Amino acid sequence: MYMDLKEFASSMAEAVQGELSGEAKVRLKEVRKNNGIVLKGLLFGKEGSNSSPVIYLEPYYQAYREGKDFAGLACEIAGNYQSCAWKAEFQTGFFLSFDKVRETVAYKLVNYRMNQELLAEVPHLPYLDLAMVFYSLVCKTEAGMLTTLIRNSHLAMWNATCRMLYEAARENTPRLLKERLKAMGDFLNEEGDVSFLKGPGLYVLTNREHQNGAASILYEGVLERCAKACGGNFFLMPSSIHEVILMPYQSGVEVGQLKDIVREGNQTQVAPHEILSDSVYFYSQDRKKLLVL
View 1 (cartoon, rainbow, N blue to C red):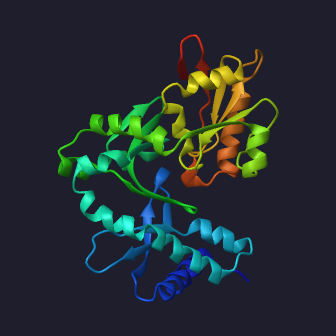
View 2 (cartoon, rainbow, N blue to C red; view 1 turned 90 degrees about the vertical axis):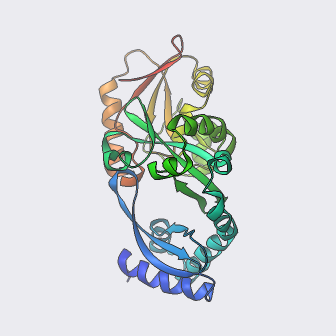
């Protein structure tokens, strides 16, 4: 009999605390994330530090439900904290200055309509029916990335502007999270079943980390390169915040059917906090522009 998520989170906090043997204090924390979804995480605090990394438990709970050993997961979480702990400590002083943070600033895409509460608290730029928000990429591990979302309070402390964030992120994000364009078949062979839309002739665009990879559509020249791979104009469908699917344009394609596929996939196969949009987009090679259909 499996524990439910609440029981799992409580037990995991105790287990990870034991693994760390006093190295850090571990407590449960609920964090509001993308699309207003609240996730359960472990907050790691250390005496004398005002940096408190959070590791979210939902992926580990899923692994537990799929049969992975609980003790092994606790050891893995503790190891992931330790691998980033020194950088989190470094962040304590470095996050007080934009000049120091600048090299780590990146952007990601979220749904504009579904994140009104979040967007009231963070600097952002509209993009079609989406919004570009900014974060500091502190470090990367095999389990994911340690990031800090940049809020309006940070801009006030730094005496910085949203434009300054954008200029930094425009340069950094393609460098820190390199784009990855693959034919659907090749991508599925490497990553497994990650999308609700499959079939011959499709392409997947993400980044090498497969984290917030939908933002790679913002990289300079990426959509033009995608058009060359697709042989011209193409439809773009958001599979999640992590990747988008490209379909070479064909006359007679029913846009309404594509929208139905995206909407149904979001409702049945994508985690609520990973949904990007129900929209379908069209890239015009001649105009070099992405449009909402």
